[in-house]
Length: 272
Image 1 (tube, one colour):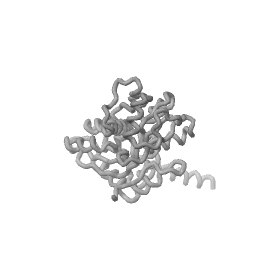
Image 2 (cartoon, one colour; image 1 turned 120 degrees about the horizontal axis):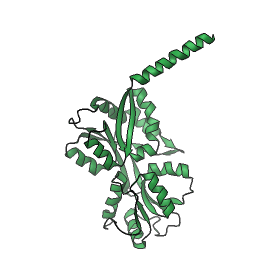
Image 3 (cartoon, one colour; image 1 turned 90 degrees about the vertical axis):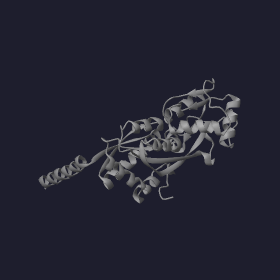
Image 4 (cartoon, one colour; image 1 turned 60 degrees about the vertical axis):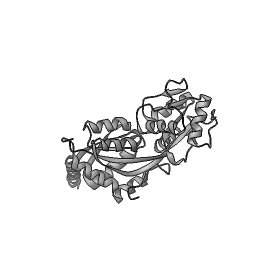
């Protein structure tokens, strides 16, 4: 009986090992939010089961991810800066862009709210922060979040802060920016998904809370981009297969089902 169990265990090991060896690896250039939230880790086994693809990724700001795409360093992009993405396509670096999920941005800050922005729209909030010279932590890394923040200053009819003493250019990812905002008692803009992930670990100890949310302009759309044929050494067929999975009912359901502490981090919208 023991010998039979050993043989069965060995057979299962070889079977799963063979499946792992047979899996084709695909490299995604993506943003910190898809990785920091845990979404990609949650999707890996589902993608492997449904497509035979083993998804790996490089998580950076969208600006850097687009550079990886231009340099043909990744097989497919998964990013969230629509204006920059459309320009990327227009310049011939990508052949298609498909929207597949979204969440939104929120303005967070210290619970004491020194600039008194609670309940205000995002434009009025930024004006109040600048008027009070209250600390504001910016990603400062050309990410999708940073691009959104820069656009919001302009929407508020204000110059994008640069050398102001109250404006903190972090130059790193969202989780680091949130930690610095907490340390400095600063306001910052974050995508809701990363905020939920941060809050799930922080449990309110940072003193940061959401103070402005809900404006239509704060929508945070994510898209896949297939790269141009000039990228001759990347896995175009695998990229199309992965994109098709994200757009499929199975992929959309997997995104909708991904939650932290009962909160949905991303909303699928491929079939809009």
